[in-house]
Image (tube, rainbow, N blue to C red):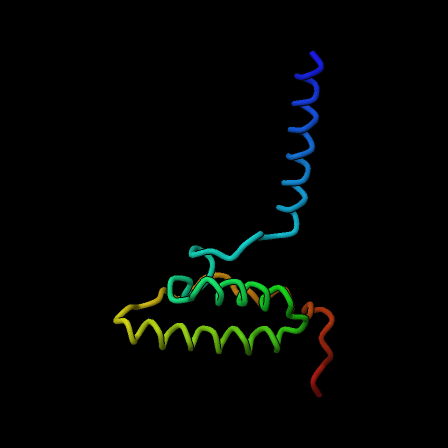
Length: 105
C-alpha cells in the first residue's frame, strides 16, 4: 500500500513539473519549428535557441531572425535544397501591444 502511494505521489510530482514546463512555452527548438535546423551543427542549434530566448526587443529579435534565415537560405542553395517558408514569427511576442502605440504625427 505504501509503495503504491509513493508511486502516485512521484507521478503527481512529475506531472506537475511537466505542466509547469509546458506553460512556459516550447522547451526546445526542433526540426519542426526551426528554419534550417538540418543545416545547423549541434553547437549552432544550442546557440540559436539561447539567442532566441534572450531577446528583449522586437527589433533585436527580428534583425537576428532575418540574418539567420538568409544564412540558412545560402546554405540550402549551396546544397541544392529548398527551405520551406512560412511558420510562426518567433519575434511576434516582443511587439508592443497595438493599443499602446503612440500616434505618429
